[in-house]
Length: 394
Ligand SMILES: Cc1cc2nc3c(=O)[nH]c(=O)nc-3n(C[C@H](O)[C@H](O)[C@H](O)COP(=O)(O)OP(=O)(O)OC[C@H]3O[C@@H](n4cnc5c(N)ncnc54)[C@H](O)[C@@H]3O)c2cc1C
Image (tube, rainbow, N blue to C red; front, side, top):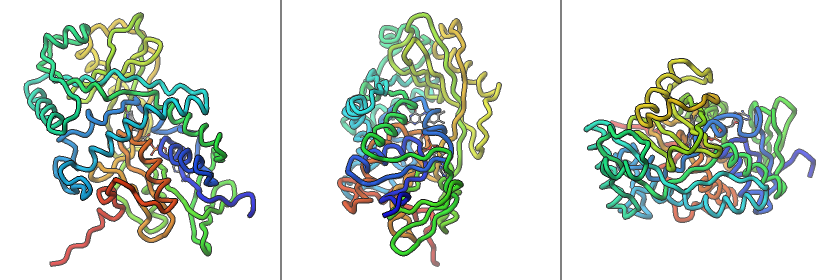
């Protein structure tokens, strides 16, 4: 066995590639992660780190509202719900495990997410979300204007209603991504930064990956290249319905904490309290671009909406702004599974605005698939790689 032969080569060193590398290396699989830039230098470091299993996947999510793919294993519940909830629950023991292995504190905060409706229309939609979570028997509370004034006194009084999700938390996305990478290295994984995979070809039972620094051989390949996955996979004859969505965020500092929980307006603006009295404000949404320029228009719109939500923020001190590229799919559901034309090429991508939340479960599922254990309690039909290639006959 030569030095550049591995059991599994992972393309992409973001939170998804890192989580998969961690799970595989922990099972004594010889792993290499090939990253074209630095560890988690793209979306995974740009993220706000919310664990929005309930705030993101309500009755409004395309998969759930259309019920296009009811889960055979849990027919009464759209399968995405247990998937997201399980991933959120996995973060708590993971935070401890990663801290022990790497010394990195992933900044887990379990103080919930408060969703705010500022208009009557938003209020009606939020009430439908609330009813949905009650039907799903998950923790959820409806708060009146007066309740919010007691719960988060600095939030605007000019609101219609609010829904509190006590079990949705948050982490530091860059720290989680780095912790996965370091923990995988503790278990023997190798990371090659500034190594772009140019193409992959089958060679007997193995794959040969051509990079800008030579070739790597592996028995299996995992494509976790975020928003660049579809471009790469086109070279293997697989066409995915994916597009990039740029998101801008900014960070400000206040003298003392002004909110305890994450405050999320129905209009898309959120404020996440971070350590050191910092508030992360996000996020804009510009589809079909890989350009990461931070624009005046983007920042102005975030600041206006943040001030509407939390008026006292206007005295906060400016720190910095950045942008990242989210990997979105045609129907808003990630792609998780085996390449339809190549055995042992696995794909985990398209996590859009929930890759931090979904990284723990994605890591375990891909590791199980690579080891031939199947997908366990989850039906992966909704995540199928061929769902956008249906052929119609008349
Ligand atoms: C502003 C913003 C806010 C967000 N907030 C949240 C949030 O609060 N909660 C949440 O759960 N999610 C959030 N997200 C979404 C989350 O960041 C993504 O879903 C997640 O980071 C995707 O992880 P990934 O590993 O698939 O992609 P990435 O982090 O983009 O990693 C993919 C990696 O692959 C590398 N790569 C690509 N092509 C190649 C190649 N050919 N060879 C080698 N390497 C390659 C890239 O350099 C990159 O580092 C947010 C995203 C943004 C932009």
